[in-house]
Image (cartoon, rainbow, N blue to C red):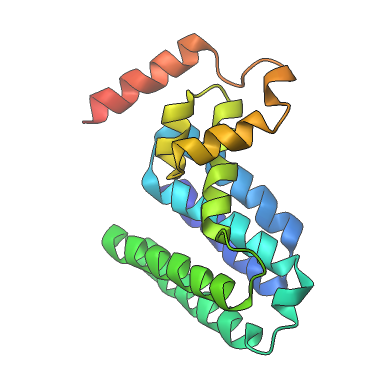
Length: 184
């Protein structure tokens, strides 16, 4: 996952600097990488990127008294993940990502205004992006870790079906499928 190291560093730096636009762009990059590779880490990174983008863009999060402590904890987890990635320790990297997702979910539960968690929203949003790229609803939900029913409801409320052609043709998707099958 050489691309992951480069973009993960950008993710960490963007979060440390509070650059919401950068976080959103990196999240989109992770979705594109996920659509091409099917690597679970890209799904987690896309969800983390989107969630951090949303948290930083909400005043009620950043003005919450506990936010600075939470921010420091997330940065420490990012540094741990980055160290594991540099050492090519994918188990350690996955563990750090899982801890980040947990910490983001806890912060959302403590400081958020909505009953649906920010990570779950991120997964559905990311799955809809994958669907918009031409993946089937089931495959998009699977890759992003989203609930199919939630994804279907979300897509039904968008104008995606009215938009242009999918990002990936059928022949491109077939080639991707062949590569994934060959890996197994």
